Image (cartoon, rainbow, N blue to C red; front, side, top):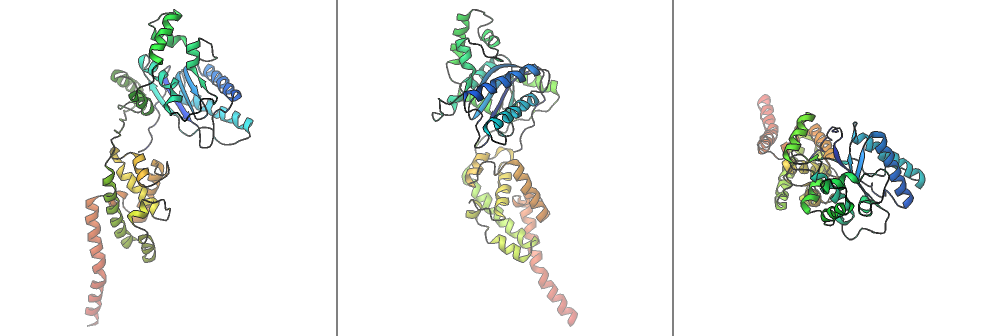
Length: 368
């Protein structure tokens, strides 16, 4: 399924912004880079009128809980990521992006939801399992909340007063903080901040907050497809039927040598292998497009079945193969899966087979 368009920034809204390191790259590797990250982030926040309440960054990932200013949050933090990558590349003598493309951006309801986001961010190093190196350099605002130390750019008083019902007493604030932040995020909370709400994957909050926000923004809701896993045993039947219909199309639309060359590799085993021989990548993409409609199957299920690397069946690649199929056979890719199309193909195949016989009869009649 295609990626959701990021919502317009709600002025002074509360946001979760995260990015992961690119392949074979690290965000920070030492205390110098950690300090450079903090100083550049502080400057960005001040320039754009934003406020930072939670932060976690290490070698592999970055998480921010911020309150936006009056301008675009994605442009401001996107520019920060570019400047940080440029600074790090110069010091390391490297090139290329430090971060993977496409930030994860969520609009979060202020109050309880934003506090739960803070707990999720503070527990980020523990959510990846015991293999994470605890000795690696990192920046975690949880340290500053617990020690009452100051960090440039980080505002802790707002959250501490929020969870202690406005108290300015340090002891009361500490007790309230420990009650909430000493326990890890629940699986439901982890899923919520990683995927967004079921109502729309770009926002987290109650129904009234979500309805009011979208009404004010004037944009439609895009409900998240439920991640119900399909039955893996149903996939081979769909792929086998697709192969049969594709062979019929090859006989009708392609030159004889090309059709025979493609048909020689058209087996269920080859389609589910790592082979890149044409037309196998196209058939995998078309099958994934059909099976992923309306959330029938999750993309990771299909990647596992077809033994594909991550992003091989991305929405962009699937659309490219759909256009290629339409250009080759002059019909939508659904022709490989629709029963009506299958009946039309059978009729066309019979007509194609009888045309030579009709031509022979006509020639015989003409000669006689």
